[in-house]
Amino acid sequence: MIAIVDYGAGNITSVRRALEHLGHEAQVTCDPASVAAAERVIVPGVGHFRATATLADSPLRAALVAQIERGRPLLGICLGMQWLFEASREAPELDGLGAFAGRCEPLPPGVKSPHIGWDSLEIAANSRLLCGLVSGTSVYFAHSYCAPLDRETAAVCHYGTPFSAAVERDNLFGVQFHPEKAGQAGLAILENFCRC
Image (cartoon, rainbow, N blue to C red; front, side, top):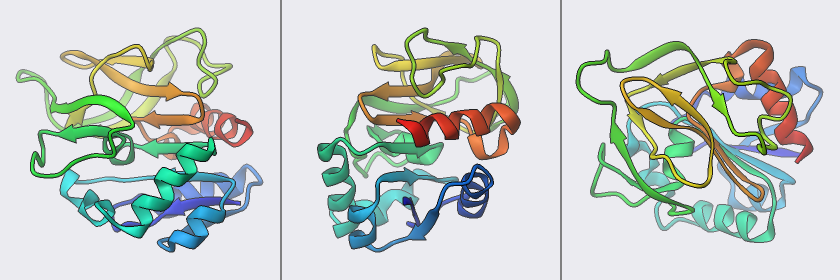
């Protein structure tokens, strides 16, 4: 079973429907015990980084950390990916999970923000999450802040500046875009996650 974490800031219905379309059982939950029992976990999210405050020092956060430590696959989507980093300048008083190094920054001046719509990816050759996709594949974005590039970047998008559109380390994954709204490419990414 896949647990979709409901912490009050998610595009939850679309994620659940996409997974069910692929034939995977998914449960929307805010119960730490259900998260701890799941085979895979998705942390979705849209909106302001302050929405992640409900995950700070909570039993739900502890369940997510335990899943990562067990090596269970976990995917952060959009705000869920940003929460996997140390912090965001959008709400500097809050800590992120710190599973990936660095702080999320606003998109640079000179580009329309939020970045909404389809944009292309430059994909790292060794990504398991993006396996089967090629550089130039377009996915759907809706965000105003972005994660830094580092050695765990699995895909880059250029929008005023290059940023991490996907990150990956072992069984921990994050995507800045919305695979649940990205057509066949998005479904392929979710299926790859379900097979990790």
